[in-house]
Structure formats: structure tokens, C-alpha cells
Image (cartoon, rainbow, N blue to C red; front, side, top):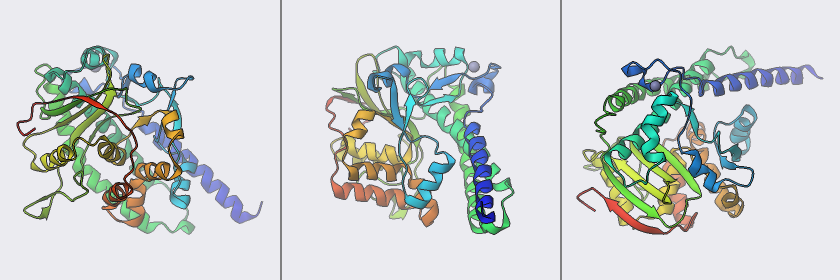
Length: 359
Ligand SMILES: [Zn+2]
């Protein structure tokens, strides 16, 4: 093998190790999140979306698709060819994370896994806590992974000083949001018994069918459902988090949006969703841009090539954002999606409920 290729092979092998090490960090949380209030047990694999719901959309071999954790080679393909394909994952492994010990997991989420979603204050708290826990674990894992990348001894010939500086900047930003996430996590854990959560306002949509795309996410939307930047007095502002759950319970499919009524910007987002007559396709596009989701293999296979491409781009928007150094990438992708008038699903809403005064 020529020497330059040897170097390349060695470099790839090193990165493969680094990628694997980083992937492990996402599964490494060693303490139940209730250690804040004295729990000393180790966390088990909690399901972000309950297994029973996932099994309803899994194929004959009990698998679904997701875009979780690119491997080193997939990561390279994202940057070089803009290709990022979904991966098969078994229903028992899909959407798991190490957040809670077995006692807390059963105690906390029985109300959303074994009972019909109404939703009660206890269920709203549980949905919020589960999405929060996943966000917290992901955030911690990714921060440690970035530390690994920053401390890694790269070969000089790589010439990646600028990328490393960008990454160091990102690390600083993440530190700021980390404090907010930790504070919110602690507050949620401490209010479990009273079921008081800041995200008390909700819209609940009962679906006629079990949704073939599922998610349970807490994220910050940076635009509304018309694709407009969020502003107060015409000045662009960043909103708080909100929660979106798309799943199924013992009765069937449902969608829940949860938010803090005091947040004016999130109210703009909710308002634009209602004005769009609860257009689920728009909601799905936003969830695909800002969160992890799992979906039915058969649904993906029946999509047209250009539709698959749009979803693939949604799933890798953070890589584009970094490469193009453009924070507005998600919104541009969303606008493109709107212009194509794509219908990803044709779900039917059979019931709507809300506790918000406005709708
Ligand atoms: Zn525990």
C-alpha cells in the first residue's frame, strides 16, 4: 500500500474508534435522574416511546427505522455526498435511553403507558419529564463527545484548526443551555408528586389511526408554522422549549403539544399551528427538523425519491448548519418543504381538546 494510503487507513481507524467511543457516551449515564432526590439505583434502558406503541408499526421482524447516531462512515457520507439513510432498529432498542432506574421508570410512566391519555396533569407531567430526561441525557452525552473531539490528537496535515475553533464555540453555547436544562430537570423531578409542570397548556389531538411516525421531543422551535422567524416588536427572539409527543396509547393514536402559557413566542408557534387547521404534515416537518423520530419501514419505502430526500436533509440539518455556518438552515429547509406542498401522511384527527383559553 502506498504510504499516503497507509496514513489514510490509519487515520480512518482512529476516527472509527473515536466515533464508537463517542457513541458510547450517549448510553453512559450512570445514575437514575432521581439521584437529585436520593435515588442510588442504576438506570435501565427507558423507552422514550413505549415499546407497545412501537410494536404496532414495526415490521414482521419487529424493526422500525430511525436516523439515530451516524457511524464514522455515515458521518463522512453526510459531509461528502449529503446522504444519510435511516437505519433499521429493533423495537426493543428503538428510542431507549438510560434515564431512570426500574422502580422510577415503572412508577413514573405507568400513567402514560398503561392508561388512556386524557390528558391528566399527571400524564402531562410524565410526558414532559420523559422528553426532558432524554434531552438531558443526549445533551450530556454530546457535550462529552465534543470534549473528546476537542482533546483528540489530530495529525497536523489535517489542517482543521477552523473546525476545532467552531467546535469550541459550540461547546461554550452548549454550556449555557446546559445550565438551563439542568435547572429545569431538577425542578421537574422535585414536582413529580404534585404533577406541577411549567408546560401545563396543551392541545391534544386524537387520531383515527396509529401514527406511522412517532416522537417524544422537547425542543426550541426557531420559526412558526408559516416559516416566519419569531419576533417581539419586530425584533427576532429565541423562544423557550415546548414538548411534542406523537404516539399511541391503549385507545389509539394521538398527538400532544405542551407549552408554557407565559412564553409569548411559543404562543406564536401554537397559534400558527391552529391557524393552519392543525396541519399534521407541518408539525411532522418541524419535529423531523428539531428532534429524533422513529418510523415505519413500509411508510418510508412507499415515499417518492424527492420526499425521502427532503426527510434525509431534515435529519442532517445540523450538519448543514455547521458546514454552511448558517443558523437559518432549518427554516430554509422548512420553507422548501412548504413550497413543494408535500403530504407525508394523511392522518385523520377525530377529536381535539385543549385547556388553553385561546382555542
Ligand atoms: Zn431511581
